[in-house]
Length: 233
Image (cartoon, rainbow, N blue to C red):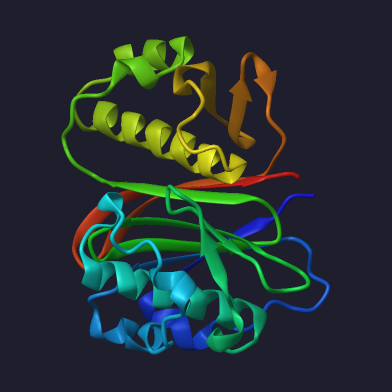
């Protein structure tokens, strides 16, 4: 069953109503700069031991941003479900990937972050989000599928940079939705853009998706390329 991916921003937090009971096709992504004063309502949840057990992990980054993300994710999930943040308990694996563990109907969640910028996602189906700053960068050819390399070869300048970032963030989001992290060879995964939308194939086999979306967003003056992938479980 396809899902509609809804994107929210910091000035829409107060309008985020709980998902309707029985709605099995939901996916929401919050794009936010957690240093923005308007994000303060997301940060009021008291942190639980499960939020803090891995804050000394090398990849956790700045402790202030780390704690803000953990509070914001629990608050966002709570707003999505119409419960209080204190009732949400989120566990994290060794790589920092989150999962809700204490609800009868457990939603899928995902996070992508750099400094104070974050994408927070919650869905009724396996979901992954990722973003990269929109900058001029040399594409990493080794992570591209042959058909992606062929497309990239026909582009230059900003179009080339953006195409690579769209492909790379979509692959990262897909791997997060699988729960595998970067344990698979990304060059075996092919991202395609058709009139019907985004499609993914792996090892020449089409992947069943419930939804896929790539956007260029502005977060407090920071331009990013953001991807959301929802698997059809």
